[in-house]
Image (spheres, one colour):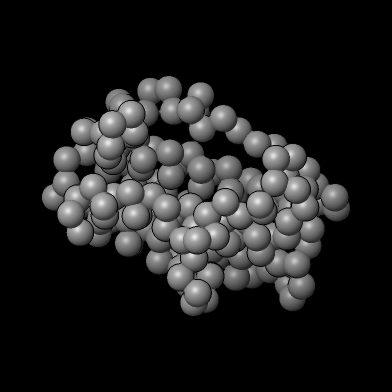
Length: 155
């Protein structure tokens, strides 16, 4: 299971899906309550935004290490431990940060030399994958949270 979010890929150009993520999420958040849990026992929209900003930092680090190093082993993280304090994060700042980090990561990806997306890395929980798989995971991860926001807003 290299990409646990593969079912959220649109089937189109994955780089375009990644680039569109922040705008789609911003649209899904318009006019909604940021503090109520999306479902019983789940995060609020504010917490999802903080998670997306944190995850984009992790994706950026993973991408750069995967491209720069041979045989790189990705460091997993516990999202629930990272989530401590998310309820007090400013949602507007989290969304802006996510958008800027994503733009930075997309610029990095678009500048990669030919073949770089096929470079292999190892995820201790998901096995061997490529840089392309990391990009697909980014797109699917966005799609997962977008679906949560849309289902819970009536969109």
